[in-house]
Image (cartoon, rainbow, N blue to C red):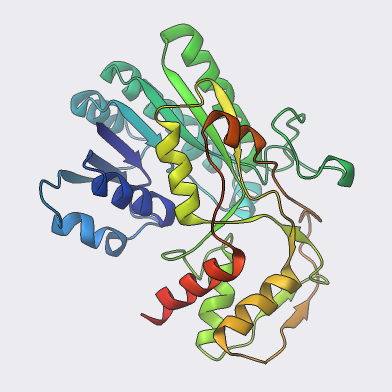
Amino acid sequence: MKALVTGGAGFIGSTLVDRLLAEGHAVDAVDDLSTGSLANLAEARAGRGAGTDFTFHRLDIRSDQVVDLIARRRPEVVYHLAAQADVRVSVDRPAFDAEVNIVGALKVLEGARLAGARKVVFASSGGTIYGTVGPDDLPVRESHPQRPESPYGVAKKAVGDYLFAYRQLHELEFTALALANVYGPRQDPHGEAGVVSIFAGRLLAGEACTIYGDGEQTRDFVFVDDVVDAFVRGAERGGGLLVNIGTGTETSVNDLYRSIAREAGVEQPAAYAPARPGELARSALDPGRAAIHLGWKPWTTLDEGCRATLDWFRS
């Protein structure tokens, strides 16, 4: 298979690139390196493994050059992961967020259409597209109304609608994966979204970790290798569907900190700061549809995933 991965130098994207290459696929990766890193693609660019077919393209997905590139490279499957992924940036700069996450996605879809690609697998956001979910509706299912409360969530919802329209108008198949809180090796410890990597980096550096609010807010933490497996499965299954990719388990930030600190061998308690405005109190995704339509289930426990993340930071 010939695949193209946008956001291919990012945390999830580069892990997906490595998986696709390991399975013998030809891969193009597109990234503007605004948040991604070529270091994440070191093995791919080194061409390790017999017959490795990999090309990196430094491009902004908002550019018309992306349309031309995808049309010229003619991938069978386009994995669209590139995004402006900071919710706070989307609140402060909603037009910029829409340029990257909506207009950029349309450029990718146009390229896929012109290339004759058979499918687009899109990284949506299970933590934002549903908005506030009542405790009786957790873990949330895909049938729950989508009422995003941030421009970032609105953009992800809009792209889902565009995917449906392209399927109807141009017979371009899609699967949209609503991701829970993804964590693991290569995640940026200085970013907004990666609390696991932030805690891991600070604990190993001997620095105090800060928990905002009382720490009882919950999230659904899913390991990056499990998520990448869902993307790979999405190339062949789950056509026309939004599919949650999470564990269905709520983990409080306090419990997360205790787990990482235990694995790191640190006994220092976390510091606490006022809660951030607009932060969801609870979040978890029901992965039942993924089991049925993708044959996917998460297999990495939180302790195993935290251990792997810490090992990566140590190395």
